[in-house]
Figure (cartoon, rainbow, N blue to C red):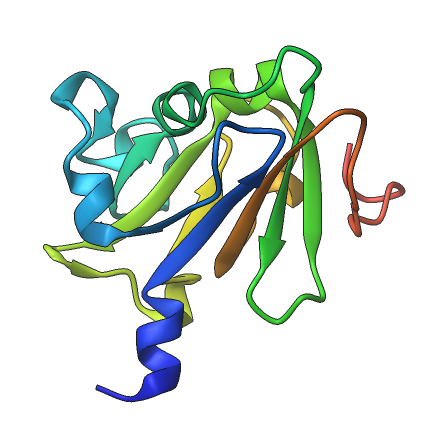
Length: 148
């Protein structure tokens, strides 16, 4: 296993929360079954994998009272999408594996945000490296003319 691969095996949950955390696939597996989505294709056709609901991640992070947004940053730093905290909790699913193996890079892995039902495909973020909880909207690189 290379050092770079080790780095991408986890993502960081940070910002207006109790304490910054680094999470990996094994951490996501530990969430109770009620927060697991064993077959993402059941809620998002043409998407395959197992995920965990963002509501679980955000609740355990204990956001500050002032926190009202969540920004999902890609590994390369070129893409970021901001959702309200409420929408991230309601619609967000973080896919972390497919067929019992880590979600491959070519499928947006190792962690990919999908938001079935939100109605904004540009809110789906591949290769999530950082999830940042903020007071006010964070960085958002989605082109508004195509992402509504």
